[in-house]
Image 1: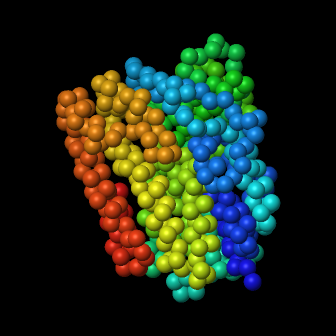
Image 2: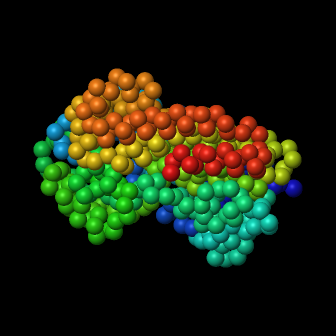
Image 3: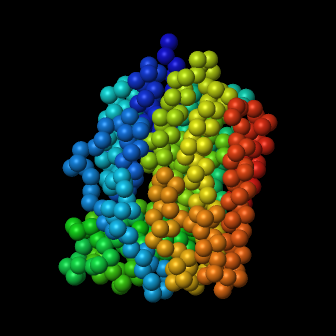
Length: 437
């Protein structure tokens, strides 16, 4: 009899993993709180196309790909604007509607035999001792041999796991963005040179924002480490509209308030009968919050691990290869960005202006990708940029602290246990999590 796999939530990684497992003969069901037509934010996403083929998915039709634009980065004062070249900076990145990404992966999953149950509110895990044996829903308990948590960054499953599972429940300050994203009509204003303008620490925002001219419409995003309301979001839109007259007043779509993780991946991804993936495991790129590519890559690693479990116990021990392979190939290379993000959270707008103007930050550092590229390579760049930083003692102290934390992170990463032992994993996870506090 085929083992029953529960995918809790319709995240990208969970659905792609479900498709792979169904092809291998598993009985897989995805339980999702939304209806099919409501899945996916009503916005566009940029991610690495290589992750599609790496996950074994078919490439989307060219008609589904949207045009990309050069990006311009603006510090608080706006005195210096750094611009990239899309052909050089983006490489294999593509841009798609989130709805079209879901159409692609759900179609593949259904072809493979995955069942989808929509309109299911997931409330908590069902436990038997320290093992997850199912999910508690508004319609009753659903039991299975393994639960794949794809509920998102505020997962009701992960957040209610008992402490003995060793998995971090909640996000801390500076680990998530509150985001407003909306598409407005494009006015008949003159063509703007900066078609995709990214604001860093703009006035009144502890985070980033962008205004993009997409030809047929305008696109605005405001991401703040501090929570803000829809009313406050609309007030901020008015401020950006004054500087960007292409941003019209007619809301075409979007206008959503969402929470996005911008932090390092969970220290521990697995427990007995449980594996976290995608936003549930915080697999986004720190700072920019993009997580689709990493979720696709994680889906293949997790599916391969489950299929290879000849014991069919799906315990923390037999699922550990998923943790080890994801962290060493993807999670750890991106973890340094989380330290950079924490440092940036301590920088004043004036210091950020200084970093732009003294070339401590150049377009190279701002070309962040979902493969770990971009941002300052502390070991290689700190000495070269030292003369500029030495004029600001606080800034120098922040960079020296970052360099120290980077060194500690590199050492702790090497200590990740190759094989599972609850004691060894807890000892390692405590060290790893402490770096980011």
